[in-house]
Each structure stands twice: as C-alpha cells, then as structure tokens.
Image (tube, rainbow, N blue to C red; front, side, top):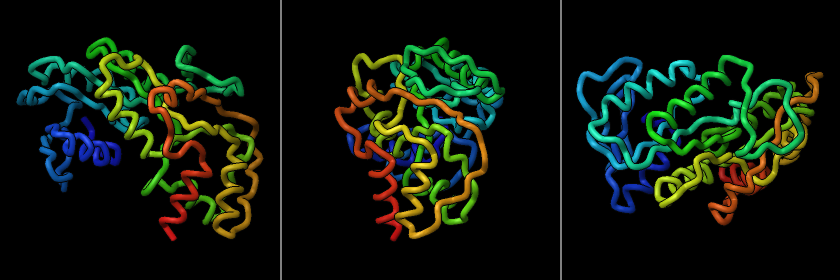
Amino acid sequence: MGFGKLGARLAPRLVADGGEVVALRRSDGPLPQGVTGVMGDLAAPLPEPLPAVDAVVVTLPPGTGASAYPSVLAHLAAALPTMPARTVFVSSTGVFDGAGSPTPLTEHDAPEPVTDRGRGLREGERAAVDLFGAVVVRPAGIYGPGRDFLVRRVREGAPVNPRRRTNRIHETDLVRTLDLLLRMPEPPSLVHAVDAAPAPLGAVVAFLAARLGLPVPPDDGGSVSGFVYDGALLRSLLGHLDYPSFEDGYADMLERGA
C-alpha cells in the first residue's frame, strides 16, 4: 500500500524470489517488471475488493495525511477479503518529538508526541497493530540515491543547526529490513531502523562539505535538540548494515554521483 521509492526497490526482491506483488496506489504510471498495479484511494472506502494477499507493507509517507492513518487503514482492512498473515507498517522516528534527549532511545521507550504530525504517526501505529497485528518499523532520516536533500543543502550553503542530534538509515538497509520482516517466522513487533552512527548535524555537513570541496554551511544559531536512537535490535536482525555510518553511505552516494 503506497508505492514510492521503498516499494519500487522492495518489489523486485520479492518478485525475484517468486512472489507476486500488487501495488495499491492513487496514480497510474510505470511499475517494476512483475508488479501488478491497482489504482485506489483509501481516503474513502474502495468500491471493489482488493485481491487476497499473504502480506502487506504500508509505506504511506510520514507527514502526508498522518492524522488520517486510522481511517485509511480501516478502509484497507475492509477492502481485503482475508486478513494478511503479515503486515509491516512503516512509521517514523518522528513519533518522538519535543525537546529531544541525548540518551539513546530503544524500542522499549514509549513515545509521547506533542505535535500533530507525531500524534498522527502514533495513531497510525496503534491502528496498524489493532487492525492487522502489524510489525512497526520506525526509520530515521532515510537517505540514498535520489534522497540527497542534505547534499543539496550543503551545495547551496544553506544554514544548518550543527548542534541538532541526527539519526539516519540508508535506503538499501531499510529495504533489507522490510524484506526480512516479511519473511521472519517470528519478527519483533517494533524496530527502530537506524544505522550505527548517530551524529550531530554539524559533523555530517562538515563531512559532506569536505568531500564536495565546499565551505561548511553557516550556523543558523539553533539550540541543542533532537534524539538519539539505539539501533542494536536492527543490527542483530540483519547481521550487518551495508552502510553502518553516514560516512559510508554518503561517500558511496557522492562517488556514484561523480
């Protein structure tokens, strides 16, 4: 459900393994080979039932209609002829918001969101669990090919808050995570999808600026903020990360871009 960059990278892995993939989306357009498209907008009940499936991955973008998650998921449940054996709901570490904390947060820490976006994401997680018994994945700062927001900011010389605590996950490792959670006989109920190297934003942009041969972006004067997430569970599941740090991931991106 939802078929953006994550779906486009996950689907070929499933097809190559003999799976049949159905992409439910609101718009038409090209799909990877072997993927069947179904057009539908779950903002309202679907007029026709969906095909029966063994598993569902929900990849609605965080922050896009987040407050509507419960009704969207209810419409999805009503449209499926049988309940899938596995549902993976892609949420976001944005369920944690507010002043932030340097103490690493694990999957045992309960979020207490204070913004509409954070509360909407949390409502979505709860609805996914209540309706589907979903496995919830919370990525932080997805980056990779085509996800070069921070690189562009450095090239533009845009001011940043170097004291903000940041976490991220390379898209490749996130897709590996989703693939694994679909296949595991007994997956954990919640996973923080973060790499092994949380870092202040200042360290990340300084690394990028050095690689690009550009000045370090100016300080915007912001205060210390942001959270740190413990990714030990994810690493224990995957065995290793292809991109364990921002240095690994961004170096590869810049090399491929060059």
